[in-house]
Image 1: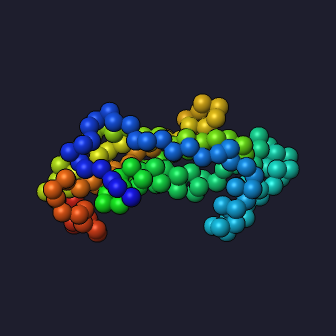
Image 2: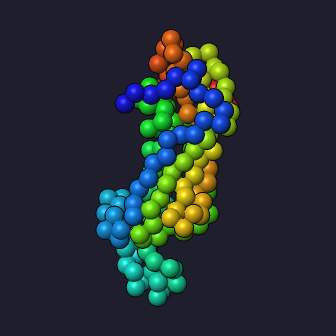
Length: 158
């Protein structure tokens, strides 16, 4: 997948949003099965609502993490790398929510062989709540530079 070049990125740029959903109970069950997370709050409505007092079955936290990774990796393209990801769950996302992952470039730094973009990222649910908030660092190649090295050079700090 084609990516971007560091020279084309500016602070304030928005990452292309990703939208998934509505997240049916079947989606949630399949994800739970694929990662072998058998906690009933992700697939058993009666258990989630009656036993745990939740509003519905919950979207799995690991799915939301994956969604944020997918957001940054899609934007950075095949030649870029997701360097760091940090996030906090602020609200519950439940069955039938449509979720939107979004991001904004907040800082840019040049290193010898590549550039790094810092981004504020998050997930918004169909109720308009920012249910997940975080930050990401993406290593992006220069237009006429070498590929971004992996693993990253030792001692590289943000």
